[in-house]
Image (cartoon, rainbow, N blue to C red; front, side, top):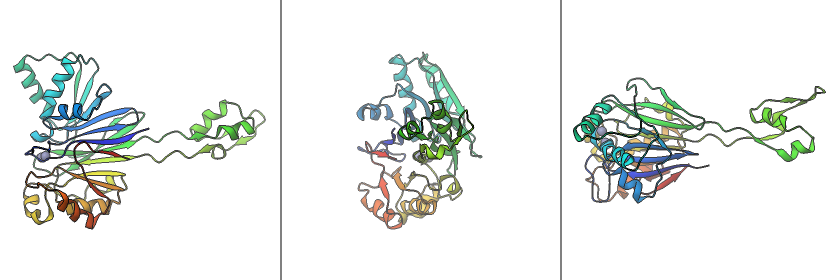
Length: 303
Ligand SMILES: [Zn+2]
Ligand SMILES: [Zn+2]
């Protein structure tokens, strides 16, 4: 089953002709999620032919306009398309007031249920748990309250070695125990270890979304050995002073964090409009952490 991130926007506050503000679309097994929703996100969703009928949860990192302005258009389009299933938006405080100010001014009445969940911006917490996914916040250090999001796949059940179970003439009922990692004891009292009749499940996959923030190692224990880490890299390292001033990260710093966290792959994004060519930014990051890629729009990253 898929675990895939599609990049919808990779620009920082000022967009360019070919780079939109932040947004990413995440598919984990049968669930889809939207993370940040910069201006133009709904058009990017159409451009890359993503399906939103299963979308139930949107995660906003912070209330700088390049991370949420696209919500207004997207929520209205869902309304016009006749959406009738609930939608939950997680964000730092203040978003609900902004959205309803606009909707009330414009006379927009939503035909579907919109739920706002305010995340704690000073303490990490688990905010969503479904049979497929667990989502928790990461506390970031930016000019206004900001969180990142960590998505972890729930462990899957053990896979039954049915042919072997048949060889031992085990009843179908035994499978129920084995799947949960429990032994099965038959009527005569004979014990069958689940280890002998199952294959180990694949390791749960994970993705961390970290934007925007000054370099912070406080998130290190949470993102340790994450499969895929998206980290903002607004500037190249020669502009470290500017990054610190504006509470952003350089490409080299993002790579250093990825290395310390021992992640499998690093994605860089949230690029300053000053960089026409992003290759030098990628190259200096790769010198520190080779498994680095640019989160360019339209690219899909499979975990
Ligand atoms: Zn931003
Ligand atoms: Zn910001």
